[in-house]
Length: 171
Ligand code: RP5
Image (cartoon, rainbow, N blue to C red; front, side, top):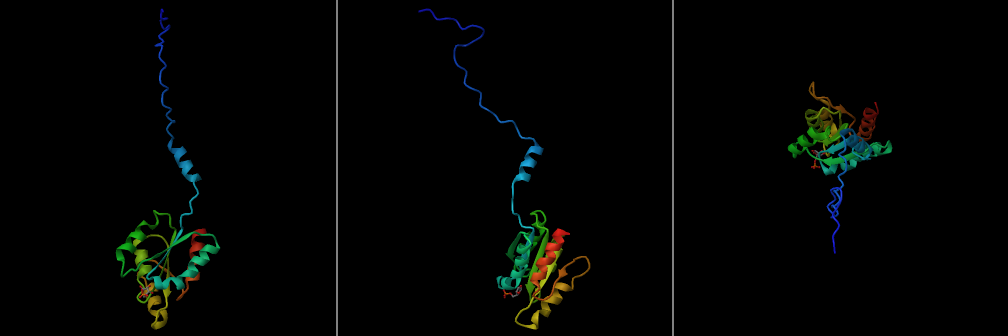
């Protein structure tokens, strides 16, 4: 039987379909897509020197929750975990935080150390301890040297710290 010659350059063999390559997205398209992704990234970092401070710092989170501002809570001591505090505060702005609330008792270095490692607004909360009624923490948090600003609320004034952070964010 005679085979018919393929005409007009046809090979007579079906060509495999070319793999479909999606067109490369442009940078503005990628940026727009990211803007559409809803993330509930924290705007406020609530840090404290000890897990024992949590009950006294809880009103800060409650105040933020009430006005719909997302926050995260971390325990880190300026004296016992200095590297952790440094890393957290140095990365805070890059991570999207707008305000740091720092609570500590006794020789409360945490607010000042946070302000030394970040240019974000820092709200200090002096926490009352077993002795001295929190005066030790108040003086430690409030007596900051020029150039290292800390907005210090009252002893055990975590609620106002949350409210002040919300006002800073909404200013
Ligand atoms: C501070 O020392 C903490 O903020 C806490 O208020 C105080 C005592 O710490 P714990 O012995 O309760 O861990 O650093």
